[in-house]
Image (cartoon, rainbow, N blue to C red; front, top):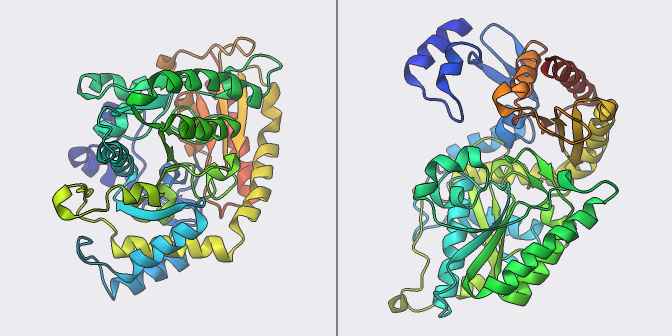
Length: 450
C-alpha cells in the first residue's frame, strides 16, 4: 500500500480529532503509520519519525515493547473481559495493590474508568456525593486554575480554562470558580518561580476562605498545565493548597493523567510537593500507550462515606462497560514492572539533563520567550517580542511550521500553538534527543521568519 492510498480512503470515512479536516486536504496532509518500534513510527513507504510527543503523551517505553506485548498475549489466553460489578479478577486486584504501593500514602482505594476524562468525571461525582452523604448538599461547586485543562467530556471540559476547547460549548457547561494559575511564565523580572507561586496562591486562599461552604473540591494539574501550552509552576503551590484544603474542608483532586508516571522527574508530580490529594486521577502512561484505562485513587475517608446499608442509597452508582478491563490491567502491571526493574526514574534524570543541554543555546534566541522543564517534559515558547513576551498572533500558526519541517527530518514534533515541546518515550537515546533539538532549532528559525 502507498501512503496516498490510505490517506485517500481515510479522508472519505474518518473524522480525526482536534483537527480542522479541511487542513488535511491541503496544507497538512495526514501521515499514515504502518508500524512502530521503540521511539520510531514508520509509514507505508519506509519513512520514519521519532515520536517526540509519545503519541499524545501516552507512550512510555516505546512502540511494540516486547515485555508489554508478552503481557497482553498471556492475558488474552486467560480472560479478555468480565463485568466488574459483582465480579472480580486477578489483574485488577494486583494492579490496585501495586498502585496503592507506589502512589502517595493514604490513597487506599482504586475506582476504574476508561480514559482520563472519565476519571475526572468520576472524581467530581465522588466529591459532590461525599459531601451530600455527609449532609452538606450545598457544597456543589468546583475551583480550577486559569489556563487549566482536564478533558473533553462536559464535566471535565467545564473544569478547564482553555478558551479554544471550551468557549463553543459554554452554554452546556456547569459554572466553576477560577483562581489565577501559578504559571511561572508570568513572573516579574527577578522573581523566582517559588516566590511567584506563593504570590499567586494568595488569591486561591482568599477564594477558599470566602466560598468554602459551597465548594466541593479544587482540581489541579500538578506542576505542568499540559494542554495549556506546557506552562509550568513550582511545587510549593500544591503544598500550600493541601494545607488550605484541609483548613477549609475542601477536597483536593490531583489530575495526574498527563504528568504522572515519571513525566515530571518523579513517579508522580504530587511527590515533589510532599502531599496526598483526596483524589488522584491517572490514565495515559498507566498503560504505557497501549490501551484505554484510567483510575481514581482515593482515601479510606472518602470510601467510608459511601459504605452503608443498601437502603440508604449512599452507594456510588457509576460505571463503564469496560471498567477494570483485564487486558488493560495486565498491561498496566507490565508497565509498573518496567518501572520497578529498569531504574527508570534514575535513567530519566540523565535523559532530562541531555534535553536541557541540547536546547540551552535557544535561551538567547530573539524569538524564544521561555525554555521550561520538569523532568522528561521540556517546552520552548516562541514569542514575537522577547522583552515583553508578546506572542505571535495565533492566526499565523507559527508552530505548524515547526511541525511541517520536523516531518522532513524524521521527527514528530506536534506543537501547542507557539510552543514546541519534547515529551518522548523513556527509551529515547541521547543521540536522538540531540537530533530533535537540532530539528526544533531549524524549525524555529523557519517559523519566526516574517
